[in-house]
Image (tube, rainbow, N blue to C red):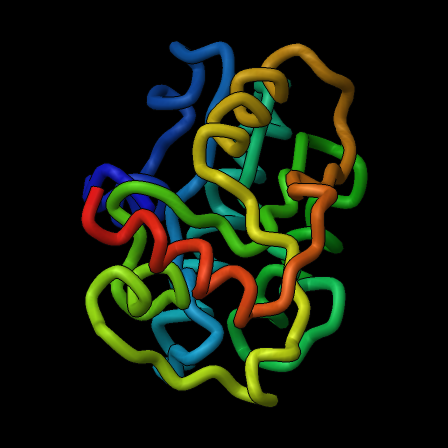
Length: 178
């Protein structure tokens, strides 16, 4: 989910002058899929670009907010490892927002939500019994806004209601035509 603004080159090439003139950097750019096998791109966007903009903000005393992921909790992919790296690197400076299974308008087509909207049938692993906390993008936006005023730390941005992937897919199907 995003605006499609290619922010990664900006974060890699940002200078002190670029950061000095802002109060806060909200870093939501990067590689976002657990299925991504382009390890070089993951390292470049999620680690090198991240550390560059993070270091600038920390050195200049600017508030730094970044997108973490629930994938950093139980790492099973290069993406999850890159998000765990960010959490460890930030280590107390900045606000990490650990997003959990975000869905909403303009979701990527390779997510369960996107596939449910695009197809009449989807393959659900483990017979749809896998359980997730699906978090609506509007709630994520509220969390990002709140992050402007909270203390540094790592925060879960998560719908407390856990659902099976089958329950979620069936619920999305009810609204598919809307």
